[in-house]
Amino acid sequence: MIEQRRILTTAIPGPKSQELQQRKLASVSTGVSTGLPIYVEAGAGGILRDVDGNQLIDFGSGIAVTTVGNGNQRVIDAVSKQIADFTHTCFMVTPYEEYVQVCEELDKRTPGDHEKRSALFNSGAEAVENAVKVARHFTGKDGIVAFDHAYHGRTNLTLAMTAKNMPYKHKFGPFASELYRVPMAYPYRWPGGPEHCEAEAFNYITDQIHAQIGEENTAAVIIEPIQGEGGFIVPPPGFLPALAQWCRDKGILFIADEVQSGFCRSGDWFAVDHEQVVPDIVVTAKGIAGGMPLSGITGRADIMDTIHPGGLGGTYGGNPVACAAALASIETMEEDDLCGRAKAIEAILYERLGRIAEKYEQVGEVRGRGAMIAMELVTDRESKEPAAALTGAINKACHERGLVTLTCGTLGNVFRFLPPLTIGDDLLHDGMDILEEAFSVAAG
Image 1: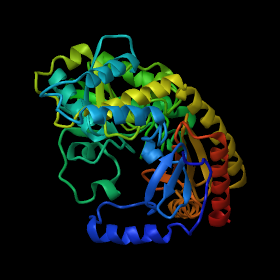
Image 2: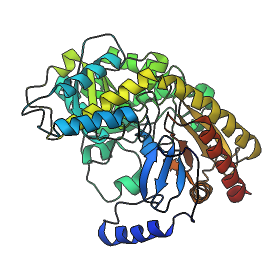
Image 3: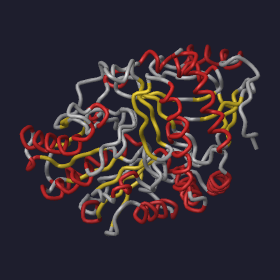
Image 4: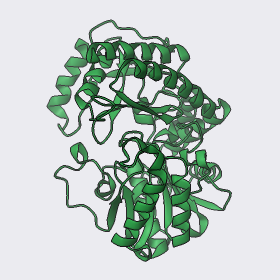
């Protein structure tokens, strides 16, 4: 077991990591970038240990993937047993119970008490693509509506729904058609002010769908309940329920992309649970399987069962080892009350980030839910001009001090905090101490 404390034995990155980075540059496409080139040899709880023996505090969880922590014993045991049994058959050829069990868990835990069906895939992007396929097949309509600041993946179809050019979309087009974008209900930057965001955004968005596409041509509206890569944007209270109801009234499917926000990350099993929103289809991935590649879509039975046999699937989708990891992860989330732990992490992060905000004018807003918290940095609070350079400088200073941090935001000016839900309070506070020091160095 790795001791849960930060240890720096070399500069970051150390000599062995630097050597590996040179090998990476000589063998891996430059298109695959690395934010922090320390090469990890082990991880447990909230610590990553690199090849130079440095132990870094993990505030990223592999982008919200290792929710139950690296080295989770339940996951290790489940994966080890499954590997010993068999590693693959392809569920479409010869099925196995683990796939069925994961679908049963998804059907049970996603919002709503209606009858549901699920299907499993490999990545969030693949699940989003299949959700779009299902929506179009069920409705017989083509139009898909996504939002400004959205991130739905890197495949051609999902890139068309992703709202950030660099580094995701640049020169990779043309993209799939019949995908439309509308403004996001972004309280901090809404032109009419946060207090008017809910009503004005809803009216404007629904008007635009009516005018640009027509409700009769719209198959689905897809939204991240808390936008991830776009900047951890939390829509104002009432917006998601109103949008979901409008979709129901118009015969449009409401798809919740819970790839980053799902599985206890927001303090609820799913972020839409916060306002009791029941989507027609829920897309899941990332935190579902303790680091193993797995994703899923879960929808109303009447929607999912209209698809013809063979219409959904994939060679590796619902791999038995990944399914075993998912079942162990879900057991951990329930038995260890990781929803409650996410709320405890939220309280610590809000308190510590609030202190930084009191001290530095450059903190425009602290927002988020559970262990999915962000701060948006600006040059000053009056202009709200994005401070992307400052964000990068603070991120670099955190890395040098042994804290794994992530930035995001369409404007490149948002810090996102995604610690494992198994991280201890001491590590959380140590990490926030590092962040404060990095702020003092970079912001002055």
